[in-house]
Amino acid sequence: MRTLFLFLLYLLPIFSHSQNIRESLKFDVKFGFVKGGEVFFHLTDSMYQNNEVLNAQLYGYTTGFAHMLYKVNDSFESLINKENQYPIKSTKKISEQNYKFNNEVHYYHQRDSAYSTETGWHEIMPGVCDVSALFYSLRYSGILDTLKKGDIIDLPFWDTGEWYIVEMEYGGIETIKTNFGKKECMVLKPLNIEGKFFNKKDPMVVWLTNDERRLPVLLKMNFNIGSIKCELVDS
Image 1 (cartoon, rainbow, N blue to C red):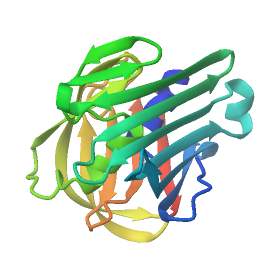
Image 2 (cartoon, helix red, strand yellow):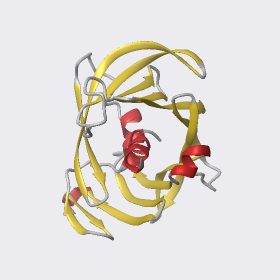
Image 3 (cartoon, rainbow, N blue to C red):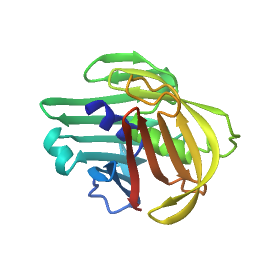
């Protein structure tokens, strides 16, 4: 359960006290027809070391019966360089049942390195993103603008004490029914998902609106016994 909810947070976008809100999104997590959690993403303008930056904040928690079974209350935050869209600093706070984890990472892309308060120094690939920055970069960096059906996107991703490449296949354009009516969407399919319970053919599918905002209106995780959906309900 912990791994599944974290994966939802990793591919999808904490409330901010800043008044310079650029974007605010809310998602419902559903197990079949039953709501099991909520996810929020906020993007604001901020300052860090006398420089203007973007503050990307992601927060998710379980609700209802899912919360009774396994309590999740996780948050992720990134400070992003406005010029190259690389993360400068990220924080991760995990609270899941009795498991707690807090970590802060500083990125030095010009030196291909990062420093984690939990695991020390690491060699990284320039442009590697944590979860909050990845959510922003995927949508606004322009990487989706020239894709053809079948193309593979390689995204360098930082998670806890290591980085690795997240691969996504572009599945073309599809019109789907959303909470905002029918929307023409880009279809992305993550490829390197491990787990014996996932459906081998299409373990996960993400739908982003085919417009300048690239809104993640729907994410679906497919398992051998059913599926979990994360639906955008407010933007």
